Length: 161
Image: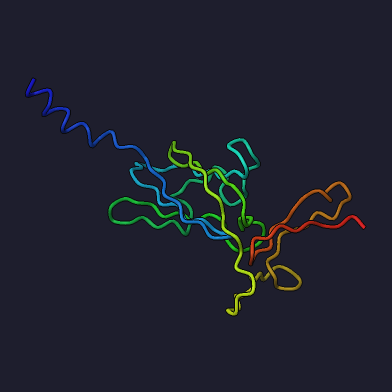
């Protein structure tokens, strides 16, 4: 009996579960993944676990993302929702994130409107006006699509008039 308890005491730390803590703003979320071994795939969906995939985290390996930070204790800090193009998260919206076999739900915050601190606009060397806005589909069939504002995360859509 004593040997079994000693064996269990050594094996118990090997069965650690993966946990995800989330800090969310209106346009981004920072994921703190603890207890993961090896490379993990990150998926981000809007609204529900089966909702539309977000383009910033669609089956992307966490260790191959250029902004993933790995702390000395093994905690991975993954930022989703980059403030450029269509990678920003929508403000005041539910999201489901899954990484390393663990799924969590979070809600982005409301944008801080009326702030006196000006934020720089996302820049792109390839666009004609040098702003990194989402690419808008101007076809009549796309009038129901929404697009995020890269600075505030507010949804906007093309009017059909």
